[in-house]
Amino acid sequence: MLDEAVPATPLGRPRPAPPPPRPWRARLYRWDLKASPYLYVAPFFLCFLAFGLFPLLYTGWVSLHSVDLQTSDQMQWRGFDNYTRLLHDDLFWNALRNTVTVGLLSTVPQLLMALGLAHLLNYRLRGRGFFRIAMLAPYATSIAAATLVFTLLFGRDYGMVNWLLGNLGLGHVDWEGGTWTSQIAVSTIVTWRWTGYNALIYLAAMQAVPHDLYEAAALDGANRWQQFRHVTVPTIRPTILFTVVVSGIGATQLFGEPLLFGGGATGHSGGSAHQYQTLGLYLYDQGWYAFHLGRAAAVAWAMLLILLAIGALNLALVRIRRSRNGG
Amino acid sequence: MAVNPGRRRAGARGLTGAGPFTYAVLILVAVLSLFPLYWTLVGASTSGSRIAQTPPPLLPGGNLWHNLDIAWNQVHMGQALLNSVVVASCVTASTVLFATLAGFAFAKLPFRGRNALLSLVVATMTVPAQLSVIPLYQIMARLHWTDRLQSVVLPNLVAAFGVFFMRQFLSEALPIELVEAARMDGASSLRILWSVVLPIARPGMAVLGMLVFVQSWNDFFWPLIALSQSNPTVQVALAGLGGGSYDSDQTVILTGALLGTAPLLLVFALLGRQVVGGITAGAVKN
Image (cartoon, rainbow over all chains, first blue to last red; front, side, top):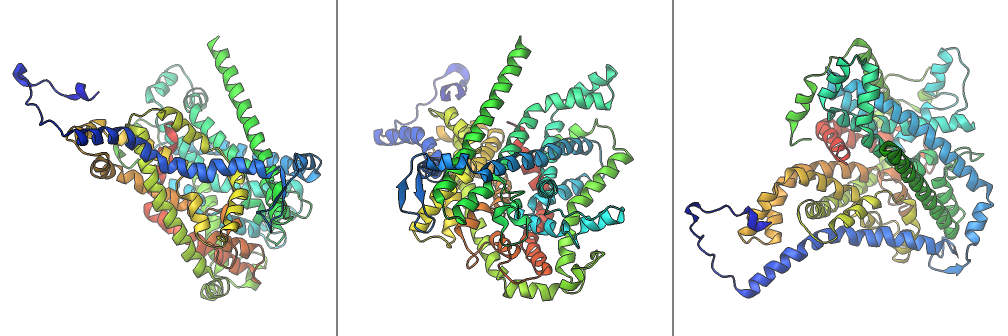
C-alpha cells in the first residue's frame, strides 16, 4: 500500500536512495508498526476484561452460591437453588411483568412521538436551534433530579397534574397508589427524558435522505403523509432499529425512576404492593435490602438470558424478513 | 457535526417551510420539555407551606437563599457537587484519551482481528450494568474502597460508546495520506499520534468529552451501591434527599435537584449546538 503512494519521478530517473537505516532502527520501526495498533486498543480491552467480562461471568458463579452482603467474600455452594427459588417467587414474575409493561409504555409512545417530532423539525424553521436545545434539556437532567420533580408533579394532594385534571373537571388520581397509574407516571419520566434525544437522532437520519427521492414521490402524486410513510420511514429504518435496540436495553434495566418515584425510604420495593417494581429494583431489593447477593446474581443472569432471547428473536425476525424480500 | 457545518444547510434548502400547526406542536413540546425544569426553580424558591397549597405556585418566590443554605449545610450538597466534579472529570479525561487511541487504531491502522475486535466493542454496549455490580461490590468491599471515589472512577475509565464515537469521527476527519506521509518520513507511532492524529481529533474529543461528562455526572446505579450518604456524588445525595435520609421538606428536595442539574444546563446553554451535533453524529452512521 505504501509503495503505491510513491509518485513516479519525472523523466524516469531513479529516486535518490535514502541512506540505509541501521538494522536495529529498522527492526524497531517494524515492531512499532505491528504492535502499536494493539497497544492503542489494549486499554479498552483490559478495562473491559476487568470491569465487564470478568464481572459478567463471575456474577454467574455467584448466582450458584449463597452469599451474604455483610460477608460478601464468603460463598457457600448452592447449585441452582437460587434459580429454582426465583422461578417460584411471585415477586420475580411480578417484576418481570412490570418491566415489560413499563418498557412498552415508556418506549413505544416515546419513539413514535420522536419520529413525528423529527419530521416537524425537518421543515424549514425559524428558531430551529432553540427547539433542538429545548428538547434536549431533559436529556441533561439526571434521572434522580427528574424523578424527584415528577414525583411532586404527580403528587396526590397538591401535585400539578391533579390540579390540572381538577380544572378540567376530572377527579384526583392517586398516581403512586395504582398499578397502571404508577406505571404510566414512571413511563412519563422516561419519555420526558428521552423523546427529544431520539427525535434529534431521527432528524439527523432524515437529513441524510436524498432529496430527489421526495421529488420523485411528489411527481408520482404522493402527499406528505405518503412521502413520510413510503420514503422517510423505509430510508431511515436502520436508525429506527438502532433506537429500538438502545431503548429496549434501557427499558430492561430501568432502575432509578421507579426507585425514587415513591418518594420514601421504601423505594426499593417499588410501591407498597410492588406495583412498579422492575427487575432492576427487584435485584437491588434482593441484594442490598434482603442481603442475598447470590439471589441478586441469579436475577442479573435471568436478565441477561432474557436479553439474549430477545436478541435472538430479533435476529430471527430480521432473517425471515430478508429471505422474504429476497425471494 | 462541527467539522462540516455546510452540509446541513445545503440539505435544508430544498425543504418546505413549516406551517402554523408545526410551530404550535413544537412550541408545546418545548414548553413540556422546559416546564419541569422551570418548576424546579419555582419550587426551590418557595416555602414549604406555600408548595403544599392549591393552586400550586407558578412563579418563583423569595426563599431560594434560605433553601440553598439548608441544602448546602445540612445535606452537604457542596461536598456532593465537588465529588461529582472530581469523578466526572477523571472519567471524562481517561475515557477521551483511551477512546481516541482505540478509535484511531480501529479507524486507520490495519491489524489482524480488527473487524472482530470492533464487533466486540459494539457488542459490549448491550451488556446491562446489573451484570457487573455484584462482583464489583465484592471487590470494592474487600479492598475497603466502598464509599471512596476511586470505586466509581475505576470501572468507568473507558466506554465502548466512546471508542465507537472516535472511530466514526476519525474515519471521516483523518486523511490516511497524512498518516502514511508521516510514516514515510520515518515518524514513530507515538510521534504520528501526537503530531498528526491528536490535532485533527480535537473537535471530536471535545464533543465526546461533553457527552461523557454528562453521562458520568448523571450516573446512578453503581454510585448508589458503591457510595453512601457520608461521601456521595450529587446523584447519590439526591437519592438520599428523595428517600427521606434527611428531614427535609419538598422545597429542599427541589433545591437539591436544582443544584444537581444547573451545572449541566449551563454547559448545555453555552455549548448546546456542539452537543446536538455530537449526539446525532454518533448515531447516524451505523
